[in-house]
Amino acid sequence: MGGEFADRVAIVTGSSKGIGLATAERLARGGASVAINSRHEDQLQRVAERLRAVGGDVFVAPGNLTRAGGAEALVDATVAHFGRVDLLVNTVALNTSFGSLLDVDFDAFSAVLVRNTWPTLALAQAAVAAGLGEGGAIVAVSTIGSHSIQPEVAPYCASKAALEVLVRNLAYELGPRGIRVNAVAPGLVVTEMSRALWDGGQEEHEAALLPLGRLGQPDDIAAAICFLLSPASAWTTGQVLDVDGGRLLFGHGPARLLGGVGPQHAG
Image 1 (cartoon, rainbow, N blue to C red):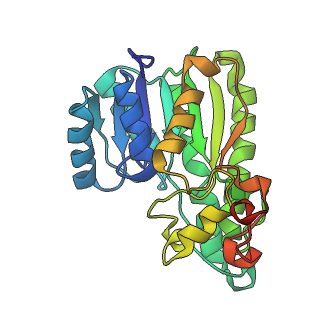
Image 2: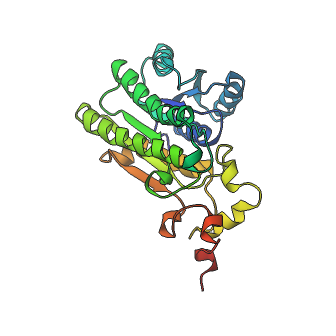
């Protein structure tokens, strides 16, 4: 990583596992001081040991970002510990239903919509109030389902489409302050949250739909996030970067709904 994040302070939410953990580790290896956050302090402590082993300066900040005041508390604690915040990454997400839209109830729909949008906005508000300014960068994690058809997780995808609207509007508002705001939209990544989409023999069929021939790993997404946080993307804001192994080149929906025929079977 070459120390490209030296003297930078980053907050990474959902950093006890998956994409959040991979992002926190990349930032730590790049020289950043990192505040790691999730609801599970015991898991965060293990992550902190892992990051310190690679030279990271780590602050453990457990808390629930989906609750009122959670984002503000996280930013305030980080600023109290490190003195400021420069970079924000929100990987926290919730999926409350799996199946037909005709079976989704009000409470489940409301929960996924609010909890997948409000934390990013609340973090941005709190960070700006705490002094985030020139050179700051914010990255949210969306999904390619926000701009494709994913019939079994439509409420989740709708919430991420709403998140992308917020990202673009934040980029518009915060650009004059020197703050960039972008999103990464992953395809199918092997994480616990997406297990229902790749487990039980589905992984091979899903990988066959990808021109690159494999499902994503958390570090694939972390690499894209860190690019958007880095000076290499200094003139990039208000963008949603698809990182999907080429999945959208073929079509929409899971393999079993497409007949499992993809580019790996062509010819």
